[in-house]
Length: 116
Picture 1 (cartoon, rainbow, N blue to C red):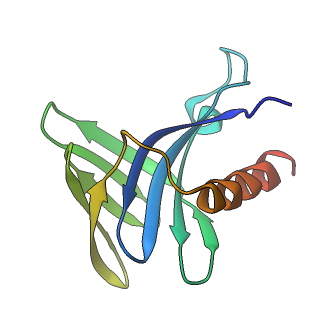
Picture 2 (cartoon, rainbow, N blue to C red; picture 1 turned 120 degrees about the horizontal axis):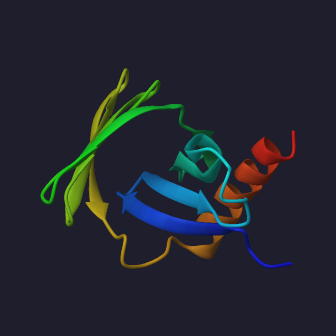
């Protein structure tokens, strides 16, 4: 079976990965909230949290995303995520993929969400 997911954005630091994943096997009529998911992967615990998307803003220089869980701002090279626990700085590695183990954990969490 072909992998139905594509990484669109990938930000990372020593403890966390934040990524936007697109589900590629849905019909054109599927809503954006079904096609696109932002997730946080915590490296130490391998915990995957699927964010609840609220809004976005994008310019040539800055991307902003607001979730129930916090706020993400990023440029082509770096970003920050701020939530109730504080603020973390991330590097934007969108031009490469996360490690296989990270992707596998994220894809399993998304599969569980989509197959409810």
